[in-house]
Image (cartoon, rainbow, N blue to C red; front, side):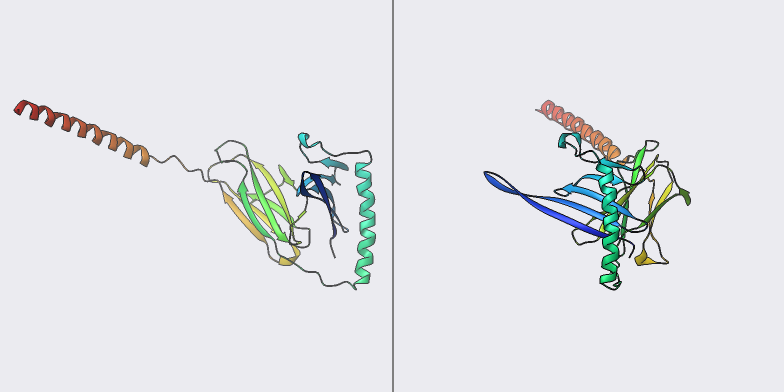
Length: 236
């Protein structure tokens, strides 16, 4: 079992004339290769641990009063050890049950409207998979890309599967082709690849031509009408 997670949900009722329900949530995941520790509120992440940089990361915006405290990272590291012990206990207790495997669904899109030679970001969204991890890689014109790439935390969907994002910073150039390839245990021996091509549409000249022709015909109609009106008055 590569990853085992605990999802903790706490419901708090806040009353001020009317009742509103809010949900705190936390996720702790661990294996020999993966570590995950995050907390959130009402579906929005408040903070997570970055085990590569060895620090806690508050992700709430400044106006939301980001949460942090002394020993932030160290407390999460201790939870990882508890998670591993619990994982080993559950595996023995349930006699290493066969895991449910759900394949990932992948989509790729640009963060902003594409403008040639203007920096942008490609997003590769991977969702619906279980269990983590997934491996995400990028190519540009069939060449592997290793720089300007970032990865999000794993986040749980309402159905118990997971989703994550990978982002690639790039500068669009006409004809460039990018791809995002996802590997997961549920599709062993196969890959899930989505491609994205830089294709900026040029402004169409059709509307301008039609407007121009319409304006000319309109002016001709006005001129013709004026001509016949004057002729009619002369006849009278």
